[in-house]
Image: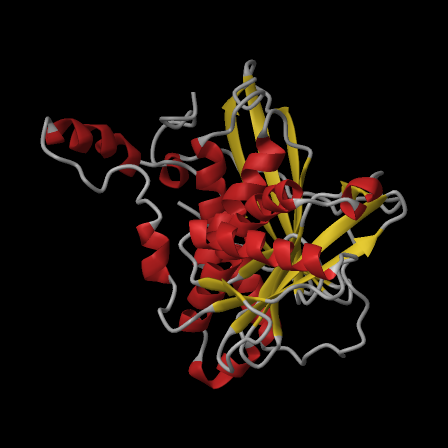
Length: 350
């Protein structure tokens, strides 16, 4: 169903994604259930996250001394973050005296002129940064007069991100080779997706975050502490036959020093206009197929000599196209039944 092609120094893993014949059997299986109880169908609930987090792990949230807040406000902010994490079923406590084995949620705030941006870092028991995220900007005046309601809003927006990163860290530690556990799981800065019609940019990015978490990565929305960067370019063009479009997705993996490590390229043909609104399961299938290729690119890079510690941080993609020409795209191979598991218009893509 898929094939790969490698080039040096930037290997390109080319895949076709599809639901295949397995998707056809799913409705039949569900229909066979009839009125039987289905207790595990749908969302597993918050208890599933509790089971994924080791019971010995506790997050300490001390009052932030560098968040441009008074002592009273800092204490209220720490309590708000703690309650939001507890609502996510994460064992957390607001305290100024963490225990030796506690992990920390380090909170800071950056004055950006007319606004303030709160930032959050997860530190392990050795006080080594493991992941980072940031909240929405707040007007400077509102931050100066911050009250419990504002802190609760920020905490409720940030707690799911911290919880997801914590679960990814744990999954990565379990899947990492024992000889390199001290290095921690690889951290990847998700720069985003661009060029997709409809809700494709946001949906593809969200599904890829989930799939990379299953592959043992800690996925961040900031560059701080990340060793790798990932961005995706999407192109939708006419495919020749009337009413058909070719969709091409390039997942580009880079290193902190800006070197491109490789690309995972996906192509498929769909009815014209199919992706103009909602991507839905197509985004899930595409991310599920591409995540393995991203892991392969990073795994190959881990075998190379490490980069220097003073490498410049990853930069966000420019808002305007770069002056340099884009890399040439390979000509798409004609659809074949062996690759697609059926006719070119796959079930579920209509």
